[in-house]
Length: 386
Ligand code: UD1
Ligand code: UDP
Image (cartoon, rainbow, N blue to C red; front, side):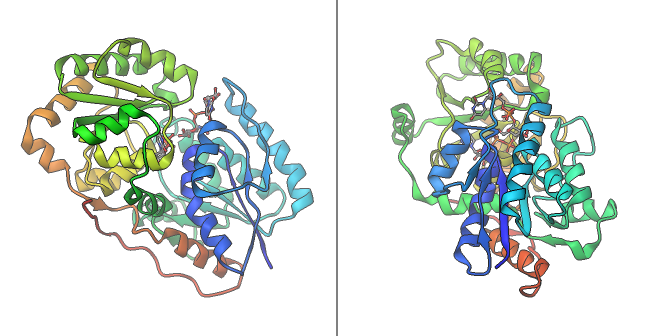
């Protein structure tokens, strides 16, 4: 039986890999050996716990303030030893983190085929997002099977010379994870959030962490949030703070003592998706949140100058607003106070998936390993309103 090794290390990879691992474990065709690098620790373990994933191997590489080279070298060292023992027939990596690219390179060096989940996203700017755009381009050069979430990402791969026979459009497994979680209405562990659920306040949900936004831009985000909180007393701003101390030091000081700002620890995925379904507006620089919020019909203001996820932009549920302090204040004000502007963005669309990406991934893997037919490609369908 072929041995397949999913390798992942951060929160978003775990969320997007979880439905694939469940599908792998549900079939008798493969032996699934789960390997985590531990690039994230608390934020990774939180996801694994929710989805019942127990890693077979944990490289435990996290260091506070870790450098990109440190993540890369510790991952490659750890995997070299593991591949010598475990000898997988294929590895699966997801997305564009440094764990993902290090996993792909280590496997390639050992002659192990690489399956790349969420392949073909491109912003067109090698330095933004940094280092993710470079990471995913590197992985595309060495992967054997490219699982593109959308037709746009497939077109990007074809334009770079990747053969069509090596690309399957699966949809994004983040939608599988979202749809399997959001309706459960899991309880909040923070009583302030449970209170919000019962009093029906208007919520501005904020997440930020991007490396290229750290420093002055992120301090500006903190100041913008403080100005919005002062101007809109009935609005509640909820900021689940990323574990990175660099992020916290930049954003949080402006927000101390504001009665209508809730700062909390990273939320377990079930709690976060529930909060997303309660939110009025989402303000974020996250990749995954840009994919999830449109499915729930939530307007998303993206604090970046470009995106590798143009589909929701084209559908009108996402606007790119950059990180300028005045612009953030202005755009949030517009959505809060101009109903037409709000309504034009609050459409449920599902350009990223239909909840069956894991199933198509297993089909594509079976085909690659000569165990079955190639699965049909995902075609974008309508969204749904909760
Ligand atoms: C990483 C990914 C980024 C992804 C993001 C998701 C890279 C280069 N970056 O960025 O693509 O969008 O994850 O969140 O792969 N920390 C903890 N505990 C945790 C997680 C982080 O203490 O559970 C702290 C550590 O001090 C660490 C810092 O956060 O040094 C930054 O973590 P790191 O994985 O290097 O970068 P992210 O910004 O999280
Ligand atoms: N998320 C979560 N808890 C939080 C904030 C985000 O579970 O407190 C989820 C979110 O639903 C999305 C993913 O984390 O699926 C996004 O992760 P992040 O923004 O860290 O990384 P990115 O997607 O930008 O790589």
